[in-house]
Image 1 (cartoon, protein in one colour):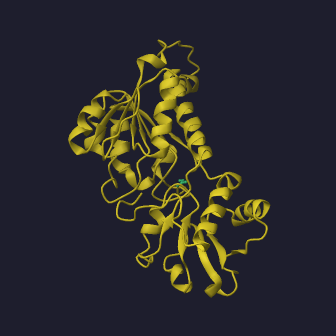
Image 2: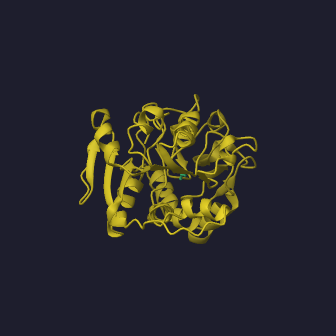
Image 3: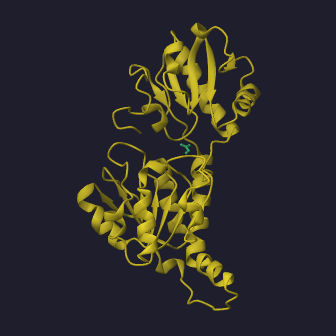
Length: 309
Ligand code: GLV
């Protein structure tokens, strides 16, 4: 039995090294030079080529090297009978919180507006916004969303949350399902999308949603590019309804040179770095899952493929 790492846009060597440090006895290989593919039982993946799993006759499980698994679900040949795992770690959650908190504090202290004033050499103090005056809306209350929501409370923000099924998080006003989306949006001054990408959430950040946010709201997408209807965001920004947006994820990554987002001064762009897997933090659960696989035991952090998360 062996593990293969099939990673594109992520360095497989760093995963290999982290696994080697804690479990040197494991046979871990890197695709495409992974030898006899019949020996592979666990495939650890990040954006693998579609159809790749057909090459592995004795595969027993597939593991996403990130929190999301949407790139696996896009593969029409994904073997439906195999368990799929993802990475769940304190590091991913903390790193996401650090990113979200930076955006939220920048919004309160109006750094985006000061940047515009600076372009015109304008010294103009703006009325300060206290964290306690700002309501943050978190869409998606899974592992990351719940953690982020609770920690934002500790910074003094008011926090509301929305998810497809109802959730209970101390101090967070939780809304659920389509029927409660509008009241959630009406309260949200700063919206963070942390939803999983599914058929139900694709394109959810659209014109109809933006107009239900209060005038001057700010939108942050740290989930997947496909959640956003790009033209609708540009419209909402240009019309002045939204004050700005920070985008970490895009329909096409890297974001193409000619993309209009680059030129829009109301948009802050980061290159899908809000929360990336640290190999050292992920290695213990990968090893644990591999040992469980060898002993035919249930795996940790298994995804429900029907739900898509
Ligand atoms: C990052 O986007 C992840 O899914 O971990």
